[in-house]
Amino acid sequence: MKFFVDTAEVDEIRELAATGLVDGVTTNPSLVAKSGRDFTEVIREICEIVDGDVSAEVAATGSDDMVAEGRKLAEIADNVTIKVPLTWDGLKACRALTQSGVSVNVTLCFSANQALLAAKAGATYISPFIGRLDDIGLDGMEVIDEIREIYDNYPDFDTQILAASIRTVNHVKQAAMAGADIATIPPKIVKELVRHPLTDKGLATFLADWQSTGQKIV
Ligand code: G3P
Image (cartoon, rainbow, N blue to C red; front, side, top):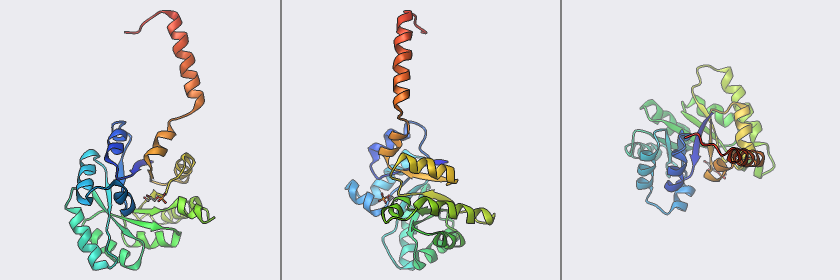
């Protein structure tokens, strides 16, 4: 499974990119607003930090304006992916942009039927929001399972499942078990993935026992 980082904070992206485990970045208007940065500048800087796809979301709601904004954003860097919302206008813009060679991430997906439409529109990525479905008492991971089952029925679908609205390390594990192609993960959750108290305890014991030998490797 590919790991995308879900943030517009360049320092956090740079820190995690140094691990070699970051395959891309997703942003959205809320994350860009939180960064306090100029949209074009922050996307350009993120595209210089990571080689993988970087999602930049349009602000327009009409398909023609979405296409115009998408084409302008795509000029920022070769690894920009255009995010459009899962509306009829977003699907029309997705089709137009993908047919002209632009990578599109269809976002704000909350059902398998929506994901079916996005695949038919030629989306590069579909972003089902797990956490927000859980927030209203539904089962976000069930939607990932349903989309995976549907997409696997149709080999001509090229759309990758990009599990989004990840809130816990269990969401990451469950998304991987469900066969999501990518998880876009907040930096805080990425850092939690590596942690286990028994690893810390075991390493401390190994180091103490090694020190007692008085030996050095180099
Ligand atoms: O990429 C979508 C993600 O940023 C949304 O997460 O926690 O606001 O539902 P959240």
